[in-house]
Structure formats: structure tokens, C-alpha cells
Length: 143
Image (cartoon, rainbow, N blue to C red; front, side):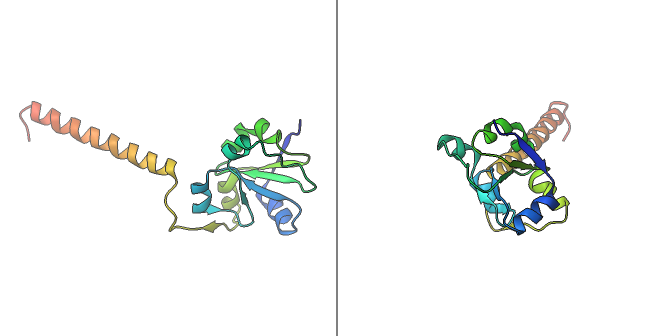
């Protein structure tokens, strides 16, 4: 089985510029639409496995996600679809930006579904705390 080798953002940028490899972003389409590395191909992990897609070819492949956690936790699954050599971007999209490299961002695209869920959950927690404080104050006879 192929092992995925970590690659830093600067090395990946050089290899992308010289067209030495293909960069595959495994995030979902809504995440990719919001922001991605120029030249990256969107191929969500869910589609990769559901379609039994093999990426074996003459060109090496590198995988990325937002923080690197998704790619790192799925290295074996990803490696099963590629030949050698194969890479994983250290730190993902966040690592790329931390290295000072540009991304393609579309701020008009809807927020990612997970971000929407997090905002909604946070709102519900704050609302719950406010209701609890109000109920406590009413129960004590205060205003």
C-alpha cells in the first residue's frame, strides 16, 4: 500500500507551479467553493470512496483539507486510491495560508454547512444561558 508523505506548503507550491503533481482537496463542495488553493481539484472523500475512484497515473498526487486533520486521519483510505509518490499537505489550507501563500476565496459563497451548524449551536447555548438567568431572576422575585 502507498504511504502518504507529508509535504510543506512551499514545496507543494513549487511542485504545483511546475505542474509536477495534482492537488486534490478532499473537503465537501461547499467548503471548496468558499476557499481553496488555486489549481486544486475538488474530490470530496465521500465521492472518492463511493465512486471507487482510482487516481493511479503518471503524475504524483497530493491531498489537502482545511487543517490537515481530515487528510491525516484518512491517510490509509486516501492511499488506497493512489500510486506512488503521494503526499499530504502539512497543515492543510490553514498551513498554506500561514506560509503566506494565496488562495482563491469567494466570500459570496454560502458559509460551509459545518460553520452554519456551529453558529446555530453557539446561538442556542447563549439563548439557553440567557433564559436560565432570566428564569432564575424571576424565581427569586427579581427583575
